[in-house]
Image (cartoon, rainbow, N blue to C red):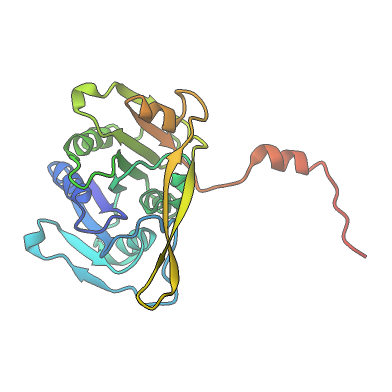
Length: 255
């Protein structure tokens, strides 16, 4: 299978390297990933600046390109310009830090998978539930290689990307896999004020995902309980129930 591999932590992130090693054993993997970290850029695309691209050096151990752009840029360029044949699957990750709850909206990792769906490709986003710089990505990478062999999953509609989160636990402590809905767990922000050498105030945003909304059927709770979570996601944000109710209301134009 031809796989386009990207992320939002940057082309030299260890999570991407672990995925490349695991997937390239059985598949044709091409890296098209941001040149530098693009965490929390969401689904941004580059319009006002040129998108510069350079081939990865052989000593990197990777085949592909570094892109001075966002994860969504990378998927667009990989499909339309950089790969000689279109990819059959887009895999994004492995992200350092879980993407559950509202983080799904902010995440560049998840946005790469949804961009794949917009462009007519299956997509898969994967994150590891830790922020430790020396995290071990090996089991998560092996699990994704195992999952790729089984796509599409039973009941998975065409072009519905999957958001996968893996606990940062030894493999024998992971309790299994759960198919979950996205929770409503949200970020609790803290803005830390500081001053630059000229005395001007600036702010550094900190925050963590909190809340235990829902039960074990939600990504946030199941991940905290030690399960790998898999959530089918979509880019259509229409609230169907609200739309149906609104259709019975007639709104007059102003005179």
